[in-house]
Image (cartoon, rainbow, N blue to C red; front, side, top):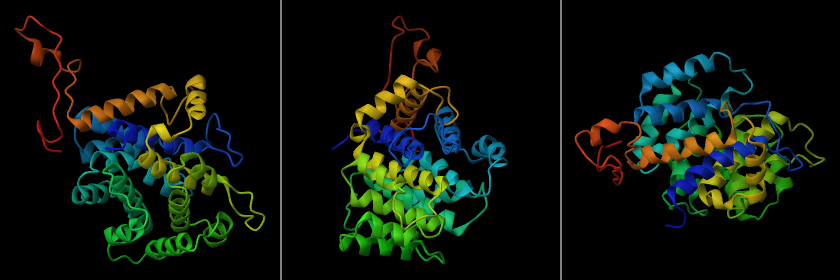
Length: 312
């Protein structure tokens, strides 16, 4: 395995956070005006606490937050909110699709949001299982979407054509940033990711770049949305080791609130706990009596491969 699961899980969350926090000149905002990942944190906490996807618990945790979502940013927040599902079920494409569609019912059933969510989650699942081939990713993703009335498959095919032609960032922006549509955001994120596959830094900087004089209508919303999705994709593929150390150190030094958590360090701890639950690690600190009652040696930890103790 090229990178460990914990590196890829951390890379996905940290990548999305960084991508949504970068300014067009490459600086990290201390607090993004769009709290893109708050619902993702709620979903992650649900999976950690219950050890499985509980639809009713997701509704209880998410519904209150959803009531306060502005119409202009709900689509991207929903896609980021489903990242825990993409990670938790990444080994099984059938369960991945089924559970994503179930969770999406919490919010308005928008076909474009559905296809965007499926596309991003499927690419992440291929990255985590080390099956992502840049030459076949887009055709595979379109196949995963199936028949759909949305324009996302066509937009992804345009991305494929641009990549095959070696088109630069300016041409891609001229194609996809003319209108602030979710389908264009998804396409631009795939372009930034695939055009700089091994370089997380360059991928997210391309995603938030708005210095093209021919493109005057790029807003902070579309820039942050593209950056967050690109960061999640590149972070899943390159792992946390692919994220520049100076950016990581800066976040740790500031240790400011992140996605509704009290600090950036708390996000890392939450991700580690999430990986532990996914992998089947039994945390003795959560249920100490079950394994220590009647035993002289209380310090005991049990580990198992996925699906050995239980099926997800």
